[in-house]
Image (cartoon, rainbow, N blue to C red):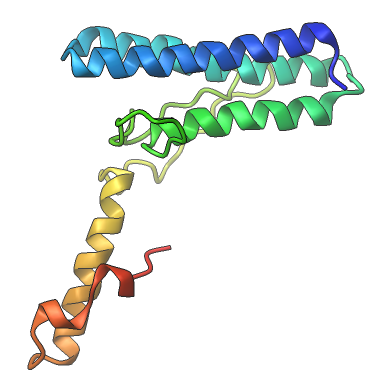
Length: 164
């Protein structure tokens, strides 16, 4: 079982994330783009950074509860990442995602975990969410090339296409 102070910090991170998601949804609906970007880039990313810092502290102190803490932190990070890319379990109607390319939040410039440059990250400057749509288009066009006598609409449906 996690120590009380660690559990308290995890609960605080979960609450901050929920509150931040609600605030981002309100700002987006109100068309307050400058405030939205500030909350997204400062508070939202800050929650992910603080979650990693909590695990890092436990790692550095050789805490016996490190694995249990890492699993709990993983749930927070997965929730945040899912939300940032438009995959969310809550009832909000926000589906676009916060980022096309999420900035790094797990590195530590001051410590021994520097940011590793992504040399391929900008080679395909297209939002992640658009890739599935492109795959559907390419697949339907490939089917049309195979049999040009069958109407495109009859050749492939979205249920026929698996982009994973």
